[in-house]
Image (cartoon, rainbow, N blue to C red; front, side, top):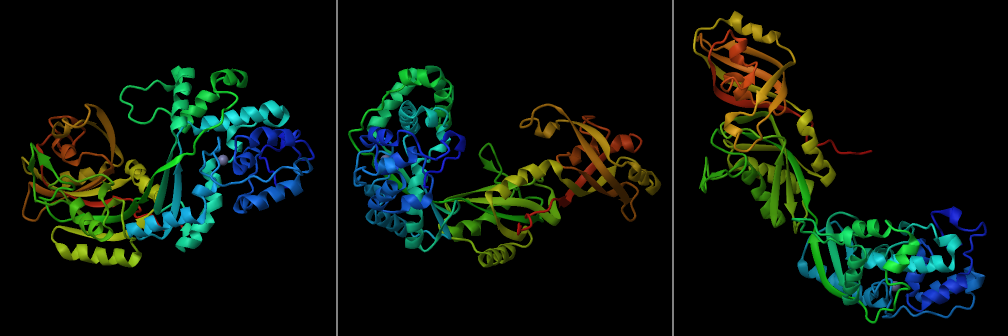
Length: 505
Ligand SMILES: [Zn+2]
């Protein structure tokens, strides 16, 4: 038995679709063999890997009702369900050779590959109309069958060609790394989108500022399922009409999916910004930045088009990042060469030799996109430890400073600091100071070292000098209303496990 519905209740207990021969006769006029079979709900992958002749023979032997069906050609047929994508024109060895040649021409290094098929977004409407046709003939089976139960053209193309491409490339078909996008267009389908828009005017109003296509798969499915099937027959072109021409392959685009490199960095300069920093077109600080120093060699090696640097928070330009360093991720877009662990450790060594007085990098590791996304989530959870050199306007004793140790998990209110008001909304944010300790410097009664651990997002400078009373409580109020100022600040530790430990489960 080759027919395999996921909604088994819809099939009679014998597993036979009533009126199968009638259904076949109605569909065979407009659909190719493979599209008939997917509308019959055949989801057996190996079924689609055989020749047309063998597939028809299997159908004939499996179903007495189909014993006498004629052989169907799969050759350049104008099909109303796949528009020709599943015919030999776009699935035979000659077509696969074109794909292989295009990949070779690009000289991209890759470990795995995948193929994406882009069809006109309104193609889902045609699947729906044929489903309505099936429901007219076999209401018992099809009336309640959701569209998701029909394998898509994209599924079938991958079933037919995926394994053959694996053999041609000698690589695995997997959803990462290199992507070959086959972009199919069809003029008649474009015209059908006008009809869809007329029938479902409210569903496809383009919102202000919306740049993406208003006809997305989900917006169309939402529209189609918002009305009854009876109503649909009047709103769509029903019964579906024959297509006059095949689709055409508008473009074949080979891209390497982004790769993500994680690591931690230290910054030993008070003039180096984390990312390029410009004010009124003029560059501030040194003529390079942490993100540029870290990504330069990765960009050169991979020949990536560009990079995006993300970190778990950021320190001010005059703050050093010490200790185990700050977690970061670099997204490399369209890299043409593969990064191996050996290459990464070589790049790490070279970065650390470039200018050891500016930055140092450690733990460079390749991570997945999902893991890269987690860095932002970790932001709120993390704790950070700082060390600061502070100065008081009057003499202090070590005994007075020791009182600071008594404050544990102290909640403070921080009104947006004046220095960041131009980029952050005015609001009072509650942050936790987990602990702190202070020690007078040798031979001084006014300068002291402060070590402090806080919740991520706490403004330390403002906690020390009070920011004109905008942070409450602050170090001034905690030290009997003395004026305290900050001379220098360094981050000692960002308490986040990063890069994530390899998942071996
Ligand atoms: Zn077809």
